[in-house]
Length: 555
Image 1: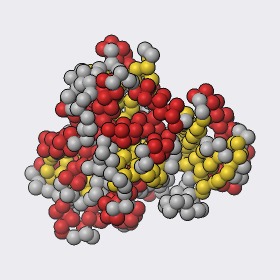
Image 2: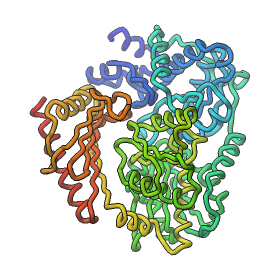
Image 3: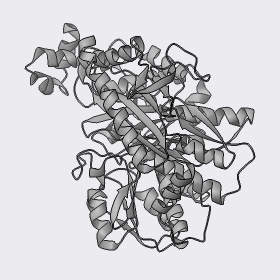
Image 4: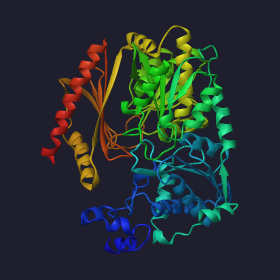
């Protein structure tokens, strides 16, 4: 490690930053390992060191991808890689660094001229018949983060085999400072790098227009939209306009692309704070619907006017509403199926059952939903209808193979305008579904543990739930325990997840986050009234917290 640190400290790009680290443990933490690269790509803090996102760790993973493409022959090199990026610090720089490494290997690349939503990158890979895609993003993480995600030729996130091959090639690189690359000025005169913008934007918009289900809606519905300083601005506003919505108001303070995300604490549409300016504007213009996309526009947050105040819909609620709307107004194939993750509410399952539609569960991560879509294309076992996860990720049409906030912003606006013309709000529809199907409610306990000690703490929590398996929560017996690491559960791949099914149809699921230093506990209940569901969820939260408090003693 000493030699590694010395090598990095001698590099002019990182010397000054590393010299300011007066604590030896902080310095070692920068080099304790390489940032892990897997099927979700690579994500981490910006900064100097092998355990950070910087020019040379980006070059390293680009080199791994380039070498993998070379093994596939000249056709793969010619098909090339589409490269997109969000509005974060250094995102565009990292995109061209990636193109520079690929070009040094004679591999074609297509780079977006401006920031671009992750779902549009997925679309572009398929549209251009490229071999792979890359998007530089850290999704909804804080401003200090960035990342590198790779997509396969189907426009979906990497398969485990593809990811393993990239890592194997990365491990063969002797020094990140010796990776060949072309500079941006060299790329501009090279035929190996083509810049994209209008052509793909137009094609993506045309595909979005095919999503429209109904024209008999209130196109004058007042809508507020915010891109939260991210990449969703152009396609979302163009889409809403093309759908015929004439009363759309943009949160101008959040319209400018800015990696500092200066108007929010955390650029995540799951957070109420992210809607503060949208709510202020909404009250001013009388908006009934507020829409917010995250920095790379793959997640959508929604707030609706309810008794004079704005109410944020959860991912579970919006997913169930969208599914119900689609099933109510469109012609549904006889073998239609909805896909959700194992930590997503059973509310959507109940909606699907109402219409005779099958529900398929996958592990957490949209790549698993995309895998099912690809599988059904081959087997014809089901026709994909809708896919979603509780963390604000949804997909309504499979011309994209990842969650798509732009698709869902347009579909949500249409849905709200459809019901508005019929004298109903989205909360009215939600309440009627609860009355009919049961009051479903969910909660999430998210625990953050930074650094190497944090990783051990998360491992301790998972061990706790496995070795001392609870037999009850809040007095409710556990009727079944599903350990996805040691058991084969519904044919799903092995994963570090434990799920407890309780006697009253409640459930609790524990898993480490795949993209953040967090351990997450998901809780779901179903009761006959809203008051009963709120009481039940609170009792289970307290029971889980009590168990988590015992982890320290267990350690």
